[in-house]
Amino acid sequence: MKEREKSTSGKEGLREKFLTYEEIDALIESSYDGLYITDGEANTIKVNRAYERITGLKRDNLLGRNMRELVEAGVFDNSVTLEVLKKRRPVTIMQSVMGNKKVMVSGNPIFDRNGNIILVVTNVRDVTELVELRMKLEESKRLSSLYYQALLQQEQYEKVLENLVAKSKAMTRVIQQAIKVAPVGTSVLLIGESGVGKTMLAKVIHNLSPRKNCPFVKINCGAIPENLIESELFGYEKGAFTGALDSGKAGLIEMADTGTLFLDEIGELKLDLQVKLLNFIDERIFKPVGSVKQKEADVRIIAATNVDLKTLVKEGRFREDLYYRLNVFPIFIPPLRERKEDIPILAFKYLNELNKKLGFNKRFTQEVLDYLTGYTYPGNVRELINIVERIMVMSEGDDIVLSDLPSELTGGNPLNYKYMKDLDLKDAVGMFESEFIKKTLENYNSISSAARVLGVHPSTLLRKIRKYHII
Image 1 (spheres, rainbow, N blue to C red):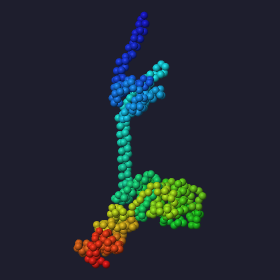
Image 2 (image 1 turned 60 degrees about the horizontal axis):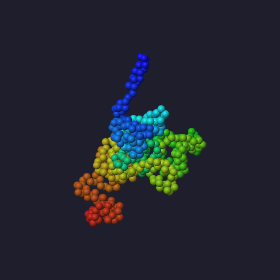
Image 3 (image 1 turned 180 degrees about the vertical axis):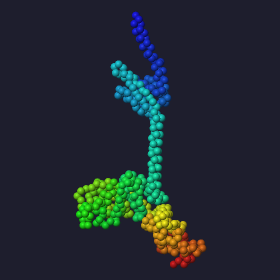
Image 4 (image 1 turned 30 degrees about the horizontal axis):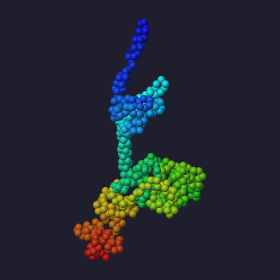
């Protein structure tokens, strides 16, 4: 009897552990996570307060409604309940509520004794803030990367300016292009007149590239005799031709292996060599003159030209396929006359270098700087360097004055400091005006044309011609 009582007492103890409906409902409502419960047909039967808080939806608008209907109505973009019913296992997905609220939902099936799903209990957590934080983190990383890239480019830009001068917008743009293409490894075509600094820019690109510690090899395609350029470029084997070294010789391509090969004046290269160069660019293999064996070389090609290669292509003097291989990233370097802001800085740069080299203490007067800036420089930067060096050597005192300038800058005009120093302002202005009108009349064949250039009326110009006795 006592044993039965214990047993009965034990059963009563078990009954006490089962929760009532009210207790289960209170438990569901007390959950911090959102709970969404459907039956086995995906009909909504229970939604707790936390779900309302997380999603902003009201349970009165959800109870009794089928999940398929809610998805079709755009309340949800998808349904984990439907996925659970389809796959018959727990499923977790990201869900968008009313198009803007992001939640993570985990659905779990509850089976009866026959293996049928009778309930799907969905746990809902708000991840909108997490998504926003992740987006902010990614944006922060992106901005940090951009900031780092900007700092790196600025550091590279300052490094470039140690060798190049760029105050003008045109030259600044050239340097920015060089910095961007340097690490990429693609072929570069530098375009510009003779003396604009193509070689220097090619070295800058090389020094900013991953190949900076490898060879930089230059070949001037227009300076090497036609019968020698192939052997210079590709090398030759022993006994390849009369006068060849017994040991043979490595070509410039082989010497540039792992580094940069700079092909200056590429437009001067003959058609037969253009074919061989094209084959090398495509295959990275070549044959030295007199050899039957192929060699490999990993080089970056930078080419330069002072002529219009497109015109040469149309004339049949330059291969179109080679042109497109070289013209992957073209950079046009403007002539010095089109970037006059750079002239005074360049002049001072070379003046200071020569002062240190020669032990001088020379300096430009303002009049000299004005003449230097106004000159057209057919030879570009190279000519400016030569002029600065010449006037440094020829000038007598520390001050470089107008009389020290070469005739190409003054046009042979005696209107310089030596002639003008004893004149008052009125006579000096008159002398300048007279010479200026003479030079203008020499370049134009009519009074009206010269007057238009000078910005005066033809009658005014005639009056000044009579005044200064200009013939």
